[in-house]
Length: 66
Image 1 (cartoon, rainbow, N blue to C red):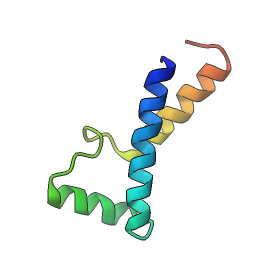
Image 2: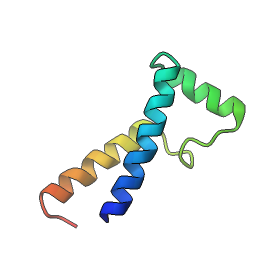
Image 3: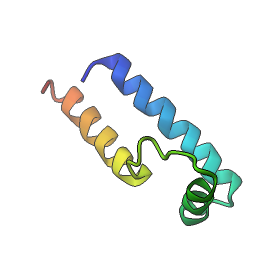
């Protein structure tokens, strides 16, 4: 993963995290709102899975694995 891809994913997560905060921190309420309004949740990749992917990519980057 290139640094620019990591930054892109981090930006997406930050946007979703701020939106979740506006729903009182409820991921379920946010997901429900997105489904009803037709907003894509990052191409239907659940936010928690994206967080796990990002953490894994950061660990690999720190250990020098590409």
